[in-house]
Structure formats: structure tokens, C-alpha cells
Image (cartoon, rainbow, N blue to C red; front, side, top):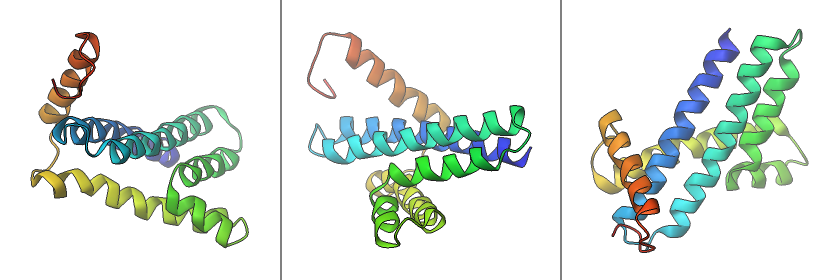
Length: 143
């Protein structure tokens, strides 16, 4: 069940990264779009890892391959993870460690830029703003 808990953690981190990416995009009026896109791409690794970890822990007799898949998913959706994977000749554990370290810094980036820690109501407001902007017909971020 520990792997299931890790999967839930990856799901939560992915969600926060997506909301933070949207907040960075909206807050910068598009200037930081590449950073926001990278945050969303990085979150996809968390979502993939989460799916593998929770599925493996619930349904597999041997969940280790699912956890290995989660490490790979996290590694290939981060610049540092990919770099470490190539530079070590395919060492998945080293690449996973690099991706986790990068994830910690990305997680802390939005509070560093705004000076405010993420909160659940703030995450909701950010997600609602993204939704409202995307359905209003406006194509200008933050308008």
C-alpha cells in the first residue's frame, strides 16, 4: 500500500504543477509561456507515474515493474532526468533521482516567483480562471 500512497502523492504533485503552470502563464501575461508549458509537461510524468503506481499496487502480484515504469515516466518528462539517463548510459535510478530533485525545485518555483505558498483555495481559483479563460472565447492569456 505504500506504493499506492506514493501514487496519490504523484497525483497531487502533478495537479499542483498544472495549476502553478497556469498561474505562471496568467500572472506573466504570456512572457513565461515556455516555463508554464514545461511545468505542464513535467506534470504529465507525475500523472503517468501515479497511474502506474496505483494500478500496480492494487492489481499486480508483482508491483515492482509498475514502480520501475513510474520512475521511467518521471525521468523522461524532465530535462534533468533525460540528461542523467543519457549521460549515465541508461541508469534509470539516477535519472529518477534527478527528476525528483528537479520536481522539488519546480514545485517551489511558483511560490518563489509570487512570494506566496500555494493553497487549495488558490489552486481552485487558478484552475477556475484557466477554465473561464479557455471557454470565454478570449485567446489572450489572463484576459
